[in-house]
View 1: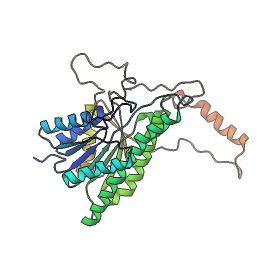
View 2: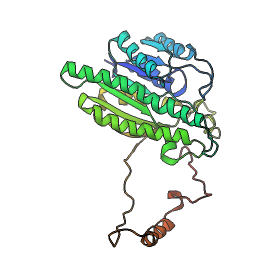
View 3: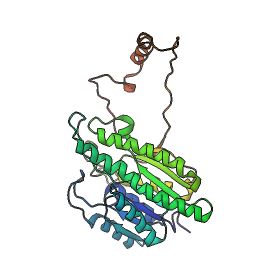
View 4: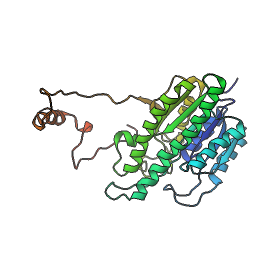
Amino acid sequence: MAQPLEGLTAIVTGAGRGLGRAEALELARLGARVVVNDYGQSGRDGSGAASAGPAEDVAAEIRAAGGQAVAHVGDVADHQQAGELVQLAIDTYARLDILVNNAGILRDRMVFSMTEDEWDTVIRVHLKGHFNTTRFAAAHWRERSKAAGGPVHGRIINTSSEAFLAGSAGQPNYAAAKGGIVGLTTSTALALAKYGVTANAICPRARTRMTEDVFAGFGEPADGRLDPLAPEHVAPLVGYLAAPAAARVNGQLLVVHGGMVAIAERPRIAAKFDTAKELFTFEELDELLTPYYAQRPPHETFAAGEVLALKHGS
């Protein structure tokens, strides 16, 4: 029986560890040939020298299990290196079918203390890194579609975060980048649909070196059960979104963790107010909006000095 991704080629960025590694292994298990990308730096803040070790280790693990994989050591935030990554997939396996953008770093700090470099670096790796690989993959699929005279199989799975949905006080750079990734995803989904290509984003919760502080208070099961925050809970959704079965899933944002997948809706209008005159005045807005926000539940809005608490796993 053929595997769902048999004959297809995938790129997974940031695949040397954690979530990316689990995704690369799952795509290979489902039959895909995988290009394992990782810059290999030792620090989760992007510090340390580049290393082939992490990407090579995962590629070797895939090959040892009977799959096909090659490693790529490169910085996807560098436009040229991102193009070389896509070209490696094409040169090695004659085509690219699946792009999973996962690479990222953290440089956390409160907004009033954050440096320009801390802002720029995180935006560069997350948001520009997603754009760079998407740009070259999209051009490849557009050319293939024109040559074929019809749609081709193309899948983009981007990695956003609930930090953009609910806020994250010490991560203004990370939250902004993850919000930008959603905008990039929906724009890409509209632009490439006519070529048969889909683009979706996931908001995963997973215990990795990137989130070791966030989930420090959530202990792993002591009875041998799979950790609810294990990256392996996220990888199957990525495999599904990469497959032909998900052809009608496009421009979507999905939250995934611990055996749960939630489909997020586009923002909806919660309330609407019209002026009684030609133009709003301060006084009229005060009469309409102040009572409205005063009666809303505390979890829906918060004033200066209050903290919005997001309990993971709730």
